[in-house]
Image (cartoon, rainbow, N blue to C red; front, side, top):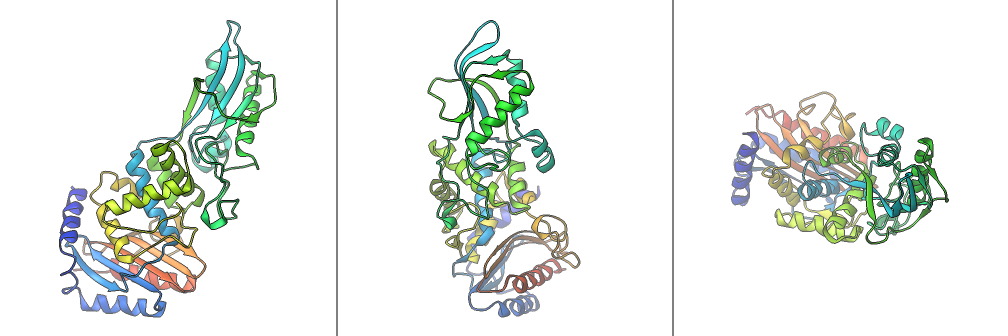
Length: 404
């Protein structure tokens, strides 16, 4: 019922944007303006009451601003839309050869990655994510399939993605802000050669189960016609999106972007993924300039008004509840755990943060004491982040404190 109510409000808002704002509470508008003014001329904001469709506040809302990690709003929404809330990313072991009656696999085994950002060792995954596909699970599956010895080697196959390890902010090379990208990432890209390292870890896991692999592991590509012998899946997309947005995880965001391209085109690249996300945003009436998945590039930009239109349009989609639940909660968790720990916004606002040098952003939703739901986007450029966060928090408190 709540989602249907939000959908009706969203449709009302989209139909009547020009007239909105005239009846907004003057005291609330004055308060929001007072907090925006110190942010300077390179900042903008837009606020809409989703319950009645009224635009509450406008402040340079039509000028594009750097999004920083608000880019993840677009990336994760698209991932949920394309994969579904229960969609998963798989990692497979394929065989090139054949097995005899004694359990000897005569040939090579290929560990082929499907872009799962959580894939790795059982101990790492349990400590970091709680669940996910592991090399130990693959070793158990191969043991269960009757394989006792491999005459060839384990080869790590990352061909689902291009070989570029970073995004546009680092010239597509290794970045200090995001672990190396690979379709066969192991423990978040541990090791300088991800596919070789992952293959070596499967080799070790097999040896521990008494399955001897004759030759040393390498990187390689599974030949056409190889047989799938075992597979494991990532946590569902709902969880992957939550693990992206709550802590603002750059690695997860960039992996999901390449996953989108791989699903659509058979080759995971940052540029193709960014086009898919930009197309999704445009289809929701919110054109944005997007070049990566995380917001590390300063070329990601959108107007505050269009971000709010995106937030509004999302309320009418089937995946909205999962996406909404992935956003940090003011004063409680994620990147907002240490912000708004007291006051009206605590527990009432869910929003995505964003920070780069001289850039700070906060966009999301606040449920006011009145019961009305507000969508807002505050994009501050040319600011000191610490001071900008204080202004954003005061604006969120003001929205959450509305009583009628």
